[in-house]
Image: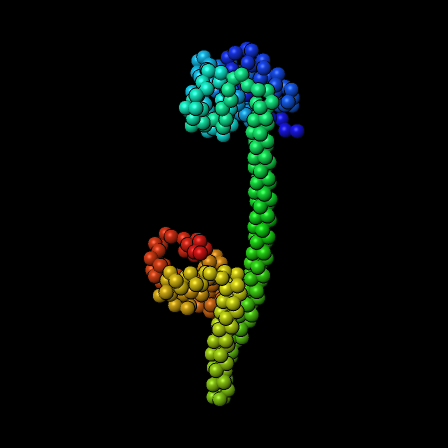
Length: 302
């Protein structure tokens, strides 16, 4: 059974006794709060947040309508349902005053016990249903947050796995490219020792072919791998800076991996100085100051 806190505000000891007896009889599990004037009722409501308030109209210090108005002005009490009880004001216009001030019902004294209890029970049932609805909504929100948290964790784990795979494949490509570079350098070193002109021509062709194949191969596979991991990066880069050349776009991707000029040099077969010059050219096209961190700028580009 729900334990609904009920605040009774009435300056008449006899009426308080009747109301307490009625509520004790029909709602014995509900804690009762008592006030003998409007100001006390307002203070008690702020502190205890009752589920329902039975408020007498004619009270000292602050009458029922004034108290009701104050309750509806307070963020912490404006949601509490209030029933106005009066033995003086029976006119229809008084009923409208109470309802316009925010009361949910208007009961006249002397009240019929069964009628008053029926109205109280109706509002308590509504209050409890509303509480259950809010609790269910909170549970749904909590479950959705847990699901989102799990999905985010899975997404991060998936991204980390993909990044690790990408890093390993990029490292593998770089090593293969390094072997091609060594082969290219070896052929260049032995070239002066070759006397046969046809053989020299063939070796030169192989040197050129190795250089072209190594660059084309690594960039083709790099773009494929990087594109799967960062689907929108290349599109966004082309959209914002259409004047960037394909080589500069590739360089931006390597910079976004936080690779140094030396590391980029090893991958691209360019000198470190050429990489730095290309970086400067990219900054100029992007209108970025030298002090601006190009890596962070590209990393945040989405």
